[in-house]
Amino acid sequence: MTLASNWTRLARFVGRNGAIRLGQPVDPKVDVGLAVAAGEPVEVFVVEGDIYTGMVTAERDVIQQLLSPISRDECNLIRCLGLNFKKHAEEAKMPFPNEPVMFVKPRTALAGPGELVVSRAAQDDQLDFETELALVIGRDARDVSEADAMDYVLGATCANDVSVRKHQLANSQWCFGKGFDGSCPLGPVLVRASALDPDALEFRGELSGETVQASNTNDMIFSCARAVAHLSQGTTLERGSVILMGTPSGIGWAREPRRIIRDGEEMRIWFEDVGTLVNTFKYE
Image (cartoon, rainbow, N blue to C red; front, side, top):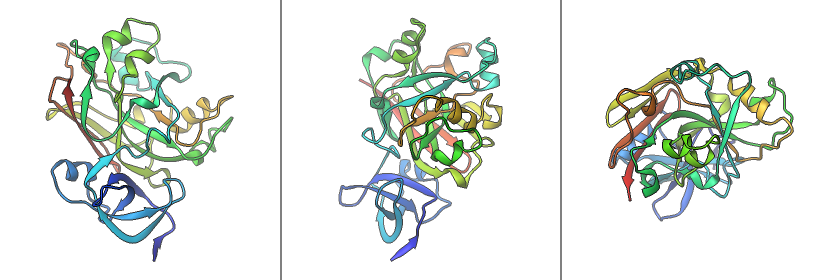
């Protein structure tokens, strides 16, 4: 029995029998990330098929463990915008860019909610957080216009652009210090792009209960559509590609004194109409 031909909010998870599945929360009001982090059962309607074409069915399951909305196998590359929030550019004392500034993370950086193991190479008083909105491309996009760009976006979710600052700033290219394994946790819920306005979302990041970042995506220098259109020029954004839209002011490295992520600390990233990504950082 089919309940709907389309989904609105989708989680990738480990179900009752240990299988990895896709599902839409039965209660659309539940914040899946907070509920699972608190040990509360979250019931979902199962999605048959894949994340791109699946149908929500009457079969139900219960989330045992949350995963990133897309797997490493589905994602070929993570493209990230730097200096895309006005107040962040101001705190960095850098001029607003004339076009989107991009760096990349490898797909091995993808992680889901839950515990994140931090490499010893990232522990030298340098592990920083960046609260960000992530877009997932739903079909191959090349040379698309700004007017059509969002038609190629499958959905949006929460992200943390975890940054190893000393490695990042030791080189003119940011990719190494931004690309450690597990440095791009996503999730837990992917919201269909047509179900929200990604350029007008309230959001915040909390580290061990302290609000460290709070803003609205209307402070972005380049909109989501502009970013997708620009990044597709002469380049194929393959289905499953991820785009991180940049971070607002309040990063730990810009604070006095600096505020880094310590062993055992919990980071919560909340976006309006999306939900909360919860990660606990565990030093090796």
